[in-house]
Length: 127
Image (cartoon, rainbow, N blue to C red; front, top):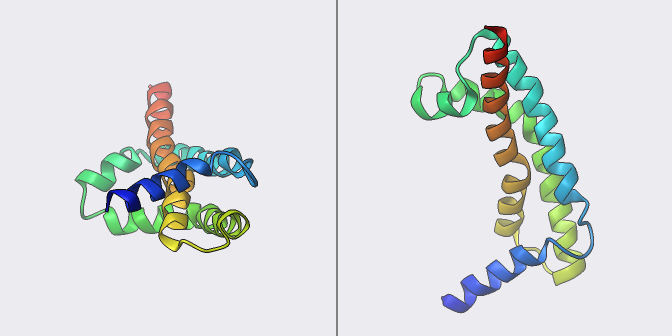
C-alpha cells in the first residue's frame, strides 16, 4: 500500500515538469478570472461569500453548486483532457482518478477560494 501511495505521489509531483507545463499556470488563471467575475456578481447581489455559503447554508447549496459548476465546468473539462494527454505522453497510460484530482486542484480549488475572497473584498469596498 505504501508503494502505491508513493507512486501516486511521485506521478502527481512529476506533473510540475515536462510536457504541457504551461497548463499549470493557464488553468488556475482561467478559473481565477471566472471566480473574480462571479465574486463581483455575488457582491453586487449582496450574497454571502461562496465557500462560506456552501459550507453553512445547506438550503442554498444545490443552487450554488449549479452556479459554480456552470462557471468552471469548461476549465475543469479542459484540465481533465490536458492531463489525460499528459498521461498518455509521459506514462503511456491513463489514470482517470489522478486526472480528476489534478483537474480539481487546477480548476475547482482556485475558483472556490477566489470567488469568496473577491466577494468579501468588493463588499468591503462598497461600504
